[in-house]
Amino acid sequence: MDRRLTVMSAAAGLLAAGAAQGQELGKPAPASLYGVDKGEIAALPDAAQVAGAQPPRKAEGSAAAHCIAGPSGVLEGCAVMLQRGGPAFGAALLGLAPAYRLTEAPGRPAGTDVVISASWPVVDTPADWVVQPKEGDFATTSTPSAWKYDKPGFAVVNCLVGRLGTTYDCMVTLQQPLGKGYGTMLLRIAPYFKLKPARLAGKPTPSAVNVPFRFTKMDGLIY
Image (cartoon, rainbow, N blue to C red):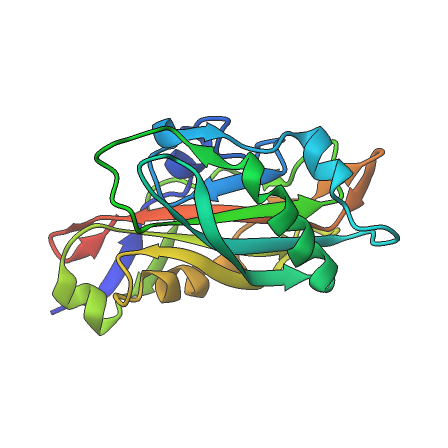
């Protein structure tokens, strides 16, 4: 049986998501939260809050942290999972953590996993696609676990985008469900993203972005 998989375009995840899921490609907000539906996101730190948290004498950096949410929507137990530019950026993100909140939801499990992230400096124009991808633009072989699982999956990769638009230093920050290899499949295609760099004061500048992909298995293919 053919295990070559076509991957669903990221465009739906990037451009259909609400502004509350900032820091995606083409979104100006420098903070993001993943792990729940966008309608469950009550608040994120705005650009001024993120800029105000930038560590002194530190020009460029980014961080991501894993947190736990419950029915109240308050995030707890946040732990840094990714910090670029030094530990000061991880500490800055943890300092911003109280500004990330979910809506109150009595039915939400107490141990709901979410990932928050932020990127510095706050750019004027975020990185974006050179050409927005469409269904079938990317393909990868399935992992054995994903093939046996045979159900939809979701993954988010956080990458740096250089001054020429090249992606590098990509890291999976979220995958649902765990242990099926959807993050692995996303890392395989990340080098083929064609991006325009972020701009600050009119000049290209490195930045960190989140790229979410949804994988839906149909007739032996993932779209």
